[in-house]
Amino acid sequence: MASFSIRFLGCKVSQTDAQEVRERLLADGHVEALDADVAVVNTCCVTHEAVRKSRHDVSRAARTHTRVYVTGCGANLAGEAFAGMPANVTVVARPSEETPAVVAGDVGAIGCVRADARLERVRAFVKVQDGCSFSCNFCVVPLVRGASRSRPASAVLEEIRRRVAQGHVEVVLTGINLGCYRDREAGYSLARLVREAGATPGLSRLRISSIEVNHVNDELVAALRETASLARHLHVPLQSGDDRVLKAMARRYTSGTYLRRLEGLEDFNLTTDVIVGFPSEDELAFRRTLRLVRAAGITKVHVFPYSPRPGTRTAAEDSVPPAVKKERSARLRALSHRACLARWRSKLGSEDVVLVDRPGRGYGDDYSPWLVDAPIGELVRVRAARVSEEGILAA
Image 1 (spheres, rainbow, N blue to C red):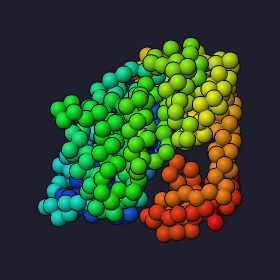
Image 2 (image 1 turned 45 degrees about the horizontal axis):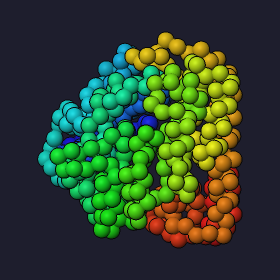
Image 3 (image 1 turned 135 degrees about the horizontal axis):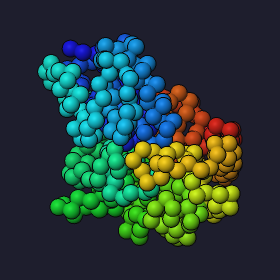
Image 4 (image 1 turned 30 degrees about the vertical axis):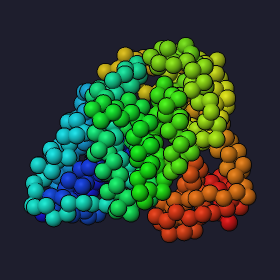
């Protein structure tokens, strides 16, 4: 029997991939421990900083564990992202579907003693799709994740039922390009999957993690509106509000399309991703991004200073100075923070249902953060008393 620890970096899909390795090791009879023999680090490579953090975590794990397995996007990155690591580090450059078996096979099974492990976190993240068949000029994800592929709807719905039975009251559907979800044999689109997942007995709240604006169509919007358990929050990556920059990125929409697709979702809390300092972004282009963020009613913006990725079409381009990227990033984050505060203040005196996911904190239906004194894992009804820099204070 081996003891092991699991760590992930990056997105919610990385979290679900790490969980699949965890469940496989538990099913094979191994145990989780802080002072473990084996460490699994599920890495990220979406930016240079993500690779740096991944290398740091792997190096640290190599000093305290007998064996370290490097998995995830960073492990599949072209080049020598993890060159020079100690001899006890193994890089598992395999598709996510194959990784749990590869790691478990190397660690060695001792017998199936725990067939069904509960997720460590309060929310249950259920991966329904992986990979991407589009090729944005800056994005390394198709190179490290492969083409788009979807899980059978029956397997997804069964996992959701299992997570609810384990006590998870909120489920998040995740994927690399979630709107590409299809189970053609069973006749499922993402909209149908949302409807049926949301109707799972015992499920209090369903979320979808992130979706490209081109997939926000009438069918999906209707499903979002008609699914009672669906949370009123949508994360829709923007990347830039300037049409010339969007074209240079090889994104498949314009700023006007982005705004039109979000019409009718004004009551949803809209959040987004933006790349700052893309090679063709000048000051005017950046100001257009600021204007579009305001026009769309976006609150939280995840800001990513542009970072060239190996193997992409813009790998050799990085013309915006670091100081300019830093200054623009600060301006955009300040705009985002003001928008968040305004939304939180609009809730004063109203009630919400909050899922407490850590000591003293939780998130409401629209993913606004709340400061609340209640047991972790509980859904609690609260009233907004006042607003701080960190969130809404419950009465």
